[in-house]
Length: 262
Image (cartoon, rainbow, N blue to C red; front, side, top):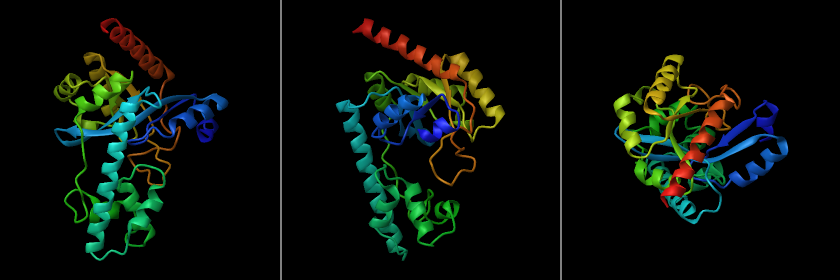
């Protein structure tokens, strides 16, 4: 949050994968720094092409159902990470679970942590080589990921008053596909992302307007040195404050509708 304030952000969304554990501290720090914090989480769900990332905004802290779901997701990540380490060991790579735990810290385990452990162990020179040689789909240490449906996650998030937006869709964001995702509970799409060239952002924005989907944007900053096309520095993507205000207005309307229906 100090870094967000230093680069001049007026608002920031904290959307770690499968955890909201950092949200209360971030919100408190943001209040002191004058930086608005959008509380959230990033989920992985099944998609026709394999995996879709969902950005869930406006999540409360301490909700029992949400916490239980996220605990299961993190447990599945641990299981997957353990299996990847086992596969690497079977290939003769000198790496163990302590290496993975060191990289993940208190966060949810993911392939980037395994990749970083491989880099630190001198097995590969960088993230790209780690995925190309070992961790990418079809590679010898790849393990399938547990993926709920979009409907499951959308129902969970809507139940606690949040919104779900599809992250960094790129060229997969076609109208027919978006309509199908919308039928499953999708509220909007992330149109501005480091991996989206202007033509993609423009096309997704037009589709969002046509389908009455919300829009968002962000740097996808991971606090890591592996930037490239997938991540930008914190504050590296200029996202209009009006987009956040429109999300808040949509949430308010949705809350009112659900209240009237109940």
